[in-house]
Image (cartoon, rainbow, N blue to C red; front, top):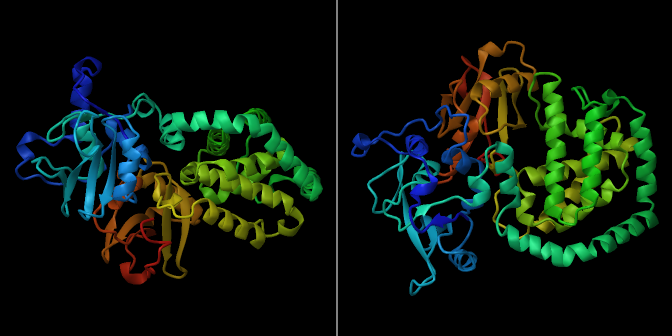
Length: 481
């Protein structure tokens, strides 16, 4: 949900800033009559614009799975000017659902239908069209046009100056004030009791005794024996991480605990990349996290992970928070079963089944997209003449270019002649080679915003190879990656 200004506030926006934002999202007046859709993936300024912020935080305001009743229920309790973009079952199209002021008679919200064609998006009744949904929303953050109000981002998003701050805003999600109040009233007085019960349970079943023994065993192994073949955090970084884990123990809010876990994981990624000058994907991360958890030697971390997994708002289990939480669970599982799994360095079937059951139980009846739908992960297929197609899920930030993704693919797929390979988009039975300065995550976001679902794939393959050598199955796992 996003708040809107009920009146224009010229005092808070300078003319140069307004001109810059208008340049980012608004087409020239001379192009209104015959607008041509641009690529939508232009180079972006270092300073975060409204469009940048919308791209980073779309899980907050883009809620296509909400039905009419749910939208009314959510917006009824919100201040006037709050809005959501969702798909209306009555209109069978995307709509902008806007919370009206209390003095307006009748319904508490008004819906503005979004017109979509092959090349443009616009609000019904407006003569202004845009290349994608993100640019449409960004434009109405600075211009009313057919709306009664200009749209304004929530303070946490509007005030953000870095990608990390935007990611934190997404993780905190909506109704943060209510969540904080509930945690303070319920979880804070129960925190010590919950921790005591978890400790007694795991002591009685012998699992902590086994974990303590295996922590010592794993600490004595070198990184390569744990499947680590990339740079690891040094002693100073490990101490910083241990301090963060100790701070996590003092918190009663599962959301705040997850935010600290996010910082820990990003510190690990930074150490991996800074010490090598390379980018790494999810396949490299779990062994390093396992190594770091063992070096911290904190038995209580097992209870911390369990606390977050059971008490975190299910809407936050998707995206980076849920990914790193399950990664932490996986790291502890590898340590608990080290003797059994030291050869394969893979999660045992029991651990995988536990994760699947937990995820199903905690997200039942929710229509939130999976982690692969969000902006930090990209599924890339690798096509080679002799070996067919394989695929990997890569950690790719929104502002990572195709050139950078190609370099990462060359490393992950062990390609010796990367100059002969490129990243392609396979959609509607056609192949499009992406230029080096495009942004794959923004292409993915734009494809997600189209009215009709489409099957598409990102494929890393030889530039001059037979494009029909790749065969894809139209299953749910590969769709809209």
